[in-house]
Length: 384
Image (cartoon, rainbow, N blue to C red; front, side, top):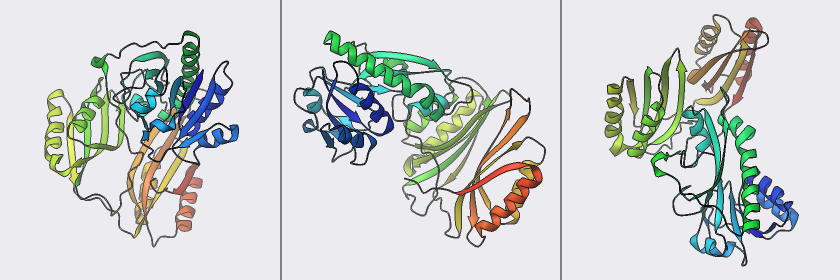
């Protein structure tokens, strides 16, 4: 069976290598977004015909070889056009790292963690109109480990699951000459909108948007994050960054929204109405968010045995040197072996240009030595 593989990065390259060794499967062409993408490099090394997209958002008809039986999409953000699908006898399938129709969209794994889902999964679906909305061909599931990050969940379970499901469905198509197709139930559909990994404030922020920083506290229950996300989507807001957690049985979180200026008042009103459901909502608003050229962004990580005074000592030392804390996240973990508690801090700092970084590192090292902590300070990478 002749297959065309459309994808990018490590996952697509892994699918490519796996399918090349599957009985009866011939990868007749590969479609990648760039010459230096890992999938493109793997295809050239194997001597497989390669098509590099001119438009990374669209796979045109000519990208798919004549006589193709099935198109496989693996980690691609490009839409496979109707003309391209028409060239494949069985159409196309894609892998999505969620139990569709839940978490349709570009950030499915991140939203699995944000929503506190106890179970995650992967779906093979038919490429069709609408993002991730085609009929299902196969699904599998896994538990989400306590405290697991999106990256850890992807690497531990969802990427291997996707590889196994793709091989399973492709071999089924080879044997049967057809693919299962079970319609998704739209009643359970949710959207996993893109999440910006970090907030880097610059003088180039669009004047057409308003920044809303929303703090929410209330009795923890299922669905609070969905309430916030639904209102953000309704008014065209971008979910820029967030810190959401459960503390002593209470939900506590802060979310940074970027909303079109003309919708800022309406979104603020809609968020304040959540008070009727028992949540305390506080909104800070700004039409501009810039960092002066005299400040440089850095990331700080601190780990050590938990004790009284770590945050107080650190923040006092930073304040005395004119260092601002843009955001800070702390957590306490207990070792199952020793029973000791480990305290961890991740912080984004704004360091005055006049303060030598070597001096700041030396002062931090002295504090680390005094309190028996591990401290790392690094320049925050520019957004890509």
